[in-house]
Length: 105
Image (cartoon, rainbow, N blue to C red):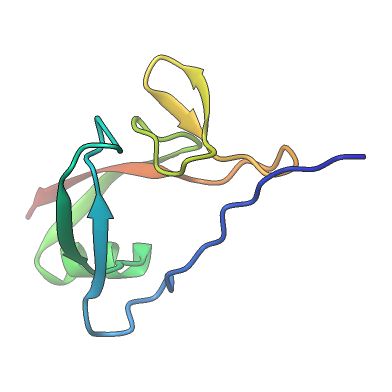
Protein backbone atom coordinates (compact mmCIF):
# COMPACT_ATOMS: atom_id res chain seq x y z
CA UNK A 1 0.00 0.00 0.00
CA UNK A 2 1.27 3.44 -0.94
CA UNK A 3 1.01 6.24 1.59
CA UNK A 4 2.41 9.72 1.66
CA UNK A 5 2.01 12.90 3.62
CA UNK A 6 0.41 15.56 1.44
CA UNK A 7 0.97 19.27 1.94
CA UNK A 8 -2.29 21.07 1.28
CA UNK A 9 -2.28 24.36 -0.58
CA UNK A 10 -3.97 26.91 1.66
CA UNK A 11 -3.70 30.16 -0.31
CA UNK A 12 -5.45 31.35 -3.45
CA UNK A 13 -3.33 31.59 -6.57
CA UNK A 14 -5.14 34.79 -7.53
CA UNK A 15 -4.82 37.78 -5.21
CA UNK A 16 -8.03 38.15 -3.17
CA UNK A 17 -7.10 41.74 -2.15
CA UNK A 18 -6.14 41.99 1.51
CA UNK A 19 -2.71 40.71 2.62
CA UNK A 20 -2.33 37.21 3.97
CA UNK A 21 -1.14 37.13 7.58
CA UNK A 22 0.85 34.28 9.10
CA UNK A 23 2.65 33.83 12.40
CA UNK A 24 5.81 31.77 12.02
CA UNK A 25 7.66 30.06 14.85
CA UNK A 26 11.42 29.80 14.65
CA UNK A 27 13.44 30.81 11.62
CA UNK A 28 14.17 29.26 8.24
CA UNK A 29 17.50 28.11 9.71
CA UNK A 30 16.13 26.82 13.03
CA UNK A 31 12.43 25.96 13.29
CA UNK A 32 12.87 25.40 17.03
CA UNK A 33 14.32 28.86 17.76
CA UNK A 34 12.35 30.80 20.37
CA UNK A 35 11.31 33.47 17.90
CA UNK A 36 7.83 34.35 16.72
CA UNK A 37 7.38 36.48 13.61
CA UNK A 38 4.22 37.87 12.06
CA UNK A 39 4.45 38.08 8.28
CA UNK A 40 2.21 39.74 5.70
CA UNK A 41 2.28 38.87 2.03
CA UNK A 42 0.26 38.98 -1.16
CA UNK A 43 -0.02 36.42 -3.91
CA UNK A 44 0.84 37.52 -7.45
CA UNK A 45 -0.21 35.46 -10.45
CA UNK A 46 2.06 35.31 -13.47
CA UNK A 47 -0.46 37.55 -15.26
CA UNK A 48 -0.07 40.14 -12.46
CA UNK A 49 3.71 40.09 -12.83
CA UNK A 50 3.82 40.15 -16.64
CA UNK A 51 1.08 42.77 -17.05
CA UNK A 52 2.63 45.12 -14.48
CA UNK A 53 5.89 45.03 -16.41
CA UNK A 54 4.25 45.39 -19.83
CA UNK A 55 1.97 48.22 -18.64
CA UNK A 56 4.98 50.11 -17.27
CA UNK A 57 7.00 50.06 -20.48
CA UNK A 58 9.08 46.91 -20.10
CA UNK A 59 9.79 44.35 -22.81
CA UNK A 60 9.98 40.74 -21.67
CA UNK A 61 13.20 39.21 -23.02
CA UNK A 62 13.33 35.88 -21.18
CA UNK A 63 11.21 33.75 -18.91
CA UNK A 64 11.99 30.39 -17.33
CA UNK A 65 10.15 28.20 -14.80
CA UNK A 66 11.92 25.73 -12.54
CA UNK A 67 10.56 22.52 -11.04
CA UNK A 68 12.50 23.08 -7.80
CA UNK A 69 13.04 25.72 -5.14
CA UNK A 70 16.45 26.89 -3.87
CA UNK A 71 15.07 26.60 -0.32
CA UNK A 72 12.76 24.19 1.51
CA UNK A 73 9.27 25.63 0.95
CA UNK A 74 7.36 22.74 2.54
CA UNK A 75 8.28 20.38 5.36
CA UNK A 76 7.90 17.37 3.09
CA UNK A 77 10.07 18.66 0.25
CA UNK A 78 12.75 16.29 -0.96
CA UNK A 79 16.34 17.27 -1.61
CA UNK A 80 17.14 16.56 -5.25
CA UNK A 81 20.52 18.27 -5.45
CA UNK A 82 22.49 21.21 -4.07
CA UNK A 83 19.93 23.98 -3.36
CA UNK A 84 17.22 21.99 -5.14
CA UNK A 85 14.16 21.16 -3.05
CA UNK A 86 11.18 19.58 -4.79
CA UNK A 87 7.60 18.99 -3.76
CA UNK A 88 6.42 15.95 -5.64
CA UNK A 89 3.19 14.09 -5.19
CA UNK A 90 2.95 10.77 -7.01
CA UNK A 91 5.88 11.80 -9.21
CA UNK A 92 4.12 14.90 -10.57
CA UNK A 93 6.42 17.87 -11.18
CA UNK A 94 5.09 21.39 -10.53
CA UNK A 95 6.69 24.82 -10.97
CA UNK A 96 8.29 26.23 -7.82
CA UNK A 97 10.08 29.45 -8.91
CA UNK A 98 10.73 31.41 -12.08
CA UNK A 99 13.23 33.85 -13.52
CA UNK A 100 12.31 36.75 -15.73
CA UNK A 101 14.37 39.27 -17.69
CA UNK A 102 12.72 42.53 -18.71
CA UNK A 103 14.18 45.69 -20.25
CA UNK A 104 12.73 49.20 -19.88
CA UNK A 105 11.85 50.58 -23.31
